[in-house]
Image (cartoon, rainbow, N blue to C red):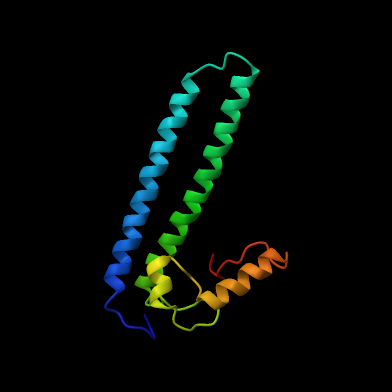
Length: 132
């Protein structure tokens, strides 16, 4: 971290790696459940509708999990680049309390709230860093 203390960096790295492993295990379990569900041939339109709904839920969860894995990977990359813990918007340090709650956070709480408000107002679809 450029402006912050480094002692907790190893702790944050461990938290990030642990969360990534948890998400990967969850995705594997979801995938296995989806494969088993496909083995059951729907007997009527109600069953078919239920199966389609479960597939839709699986795809949405998978999309969210993939997004989280990207955020974790980006955080680990920022650690390697010595920019972890620095807000990507205002370039001020992100509080330790926030990093402990959301170790993949890219923004300080103030900037995150402003970005969320702009998204809610329809001013922006999704905020991404310039290199993404």
